[in-house]
Length: 102
Image (cartoon, rainbow, N blue to C red):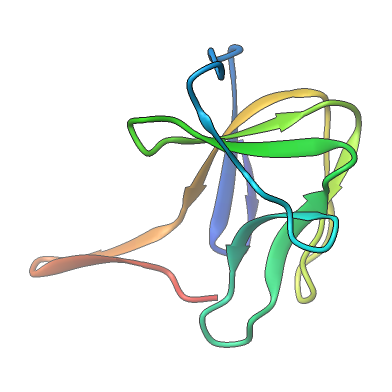
């Protein structure tokens, strides 16, 4: 498992992406999450990775070859080829659950 700020990635066995929706890159980058406070983003080059959303809402990052997950305020993370489930860290209290704001 990898964590970068409020984003986490978990390596998974290959998922069937044939019915998944591919998320369009932005200016050559695959954006996994954008900071609500700063606008900074967790992203990879679209040349080495693609992001898909399954019907269940699960997000899958397909990394084609060695890649670097970048963010303006966090250190880069090297990712090996394969598929990763993408999630956001959440906070909890007894009355509600919300995404961590980065």
